Amino acid sequence: MTPADEIDSKEAVFWADQSAREIIARRDRYVVATGITPSGEIHIGNMREVVTADTIVRVLREPGHNPQLKYIADTYDPLRRVYPFLDPQKYASHIGKPLSEIPCPCEKHESYAEHFLEPFLRSLKALDIQVEIFRADRMYKDGQYTQNIIRALEGTERIRAILKEATGKKTDEHWSPFNPLCNTCKRMIGTIVTDFDAAEKTVSYKCDCGDNGSAPMAGGGKLTWRVDWAARWEILGVTIEPFGKDHASAGGSYDSGVKISKEIFGYEPPFPIVYEWISLRGGGDMSSSKGNVISIHEMLEVVPAEVLKYAVVKVKPNRRIVFDPGLPLLQLIDEFDDPTSPNRHRRAAELSAVPGSPPVKAPFRHIVSLVQTTQNDIDEMAAILKRSGYDVSDLEALKARATYARKWLDRFAPEEVRFEVQKTLPPTANALKPHQKKALGLLADKLRSGMNADEIHSVIYSVKDKVKATPQELFEAIYQALLGKSRGPRAGFFLASLETEFLAARFKEVAATPGSGS
Image 1 (cartoon, rainbow, N blue to C red):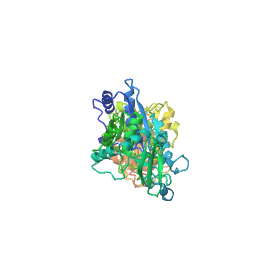
Image 2 (cartoon, one colour):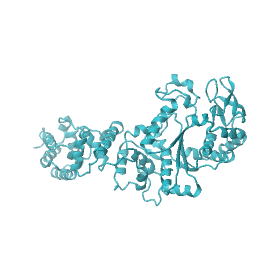
Image 3 (cartoon, rainbow, N blue to C red):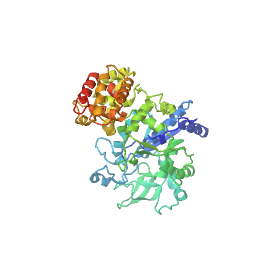
Image 4 (cartoon, helix red, strand yellow):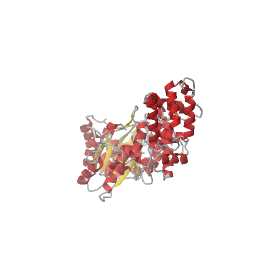
């Protein structure tokens, strides 16, 4: 997260508390809805909606209200095209069919929709977001939409007028608020409603494939998006809903939905919470269809669930979030874990908490360094941290953080953060300048077993002054001697994590190479 994205910790009222006050003043029931179309990987860009909804629910619970959180998976939406991550030969024939009726890409799930939905639902559990799940295909097939389908078909001309008022565009002469499912080709795209029977609850249609037939309203098609959204508000009793800025624009889905909800379904539309996008640093807005995503379940392997939530909760919904999984993510974990951090937002951290995830009382950047220095030896990590004054009584918490650190290093860490302590003197150390080599020889004589990071840091600076080296030159010499690189982790803590005898021998070896000036 970039500094510009962060919410001002000095604000008098946190955004979620302010939204809750407005909701309580305007609504007497608290049913929060959110949802997604599982047409591809459900990514951290999609996460903003459900985390925002969950945050509102948590705040509403505090004064004793009993809010509900309902999650609608739009499993009955049609496949629009063959996305880059799909096999064209396998999926071209399924374009236009409902996602719930298409085969699973990995052949391990009930359907295409479940393939992408199942890992997301697991992620919700990890994030401690408790939702009631509704699958649109089942809602349609069970007849939950049927009465509103009748209302929409009866109000077709008024809906046409509403859409023209909202968008400025006239609908096609064959337009209908209901897209029938063809009995022959099993597609929703290319069908036209020719008539409907409210008593029999059926629609007559003709399809591009040549079929003319009749389909039941229950499961035999679905309402178009703008009408479907308004219909579900009434069906599920929704009173609050977060949604993206695209739906909130003038003439957007919410504008038309408000009128359709009131005039066609006789229902007061929900209180809106509009949010900005989450984009990837250097990658733009995330898009499942373009493959420009990091999935939520993948990210939860790299960062603790509470920190991932915190990244969203701390930023006002109307501010864009630029997600950078590199060094800024490492810094974000330290910000969340350290109650004394000046950048930490206490209220956001409180609302992001996940049960059973105690923070480690040591900087994550140190753990990132230690998993490389110790080669994942937890006992050695604990000993080093304890020697440096950190509380490491919770070894399981340390082990969990070390696992995250390893995954982050493998997946997202920039090259400058990755290192390996060399078993033999790196050839690049021979090229150090004479005064750099001399400095390492002096440093070898001054290092003592049991020194902590601050003490080692002081020694480094005292040696620097004796040989008239710049800090950059001395740090470069240290890293070249140990890593074969000109940069590395914070020197004081890094040296404190290595055996003093090893350091002294390595530094003396460098000092003894030709050109040391001894």
